[in-house]
Amino acid sequence: MLTSTALVLMMVPGLAMFYGGLVRTKNVLGTMMHSFVAMGIMTILWVVAGYAMCFGTQCAGGLVRMGQRIRFPEKMDNSILDVGVPEYVFSMFQAKFAIITPALIAGAFAERVRFKSYVVFISLWGLLVYNPLCHWVWASDGFLFNLGANGAIDFAGGTVVHISAGVSGLVAALFLGARRVSPKRPCRRVIW
Image 1 (cartoon, one colour):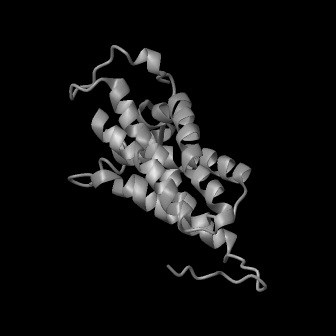
Image 2 (cartoon, one colour):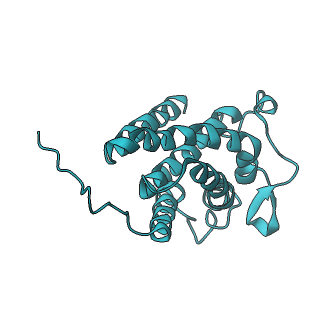
């Protein structure tokens, strides 16, 4: 699980370079920082509230988890889950999904949002969209996890990561509208 965590965390700089290559030269650094700042913000949110919201005690009729079991890393040192994995390793494994998802959304509004707005957006999005969806699909008592005979089958984060990032990116792009390119300075074609 630690190897998988490290490999997915290496996707964040790769995603930053990918998005940096898609924008104009003046916006490369800002667009790349969208991916890197997601690492810091989502990690802090995950430790403070995210893990408890996704895998803590249940409240609000099973729609969200929270309550008494806010689990900071120092409380997880001696806790081993039923599958034989230390709880802090499981928490890090799940945190990487929380980190990469808003970084994926950032491509939908590259060059069109201010950095402060992006920070506020991913903070609220993580708490209000990602964490409840993570609980619904991946927690053992989440309603999508227990839906039907087999529950929600979510291979490699297809629902929690990819569908939520895609829908959120589409909504953000529609909200922001089309990109505005100055008529005096059209986009240049790069010829190699």
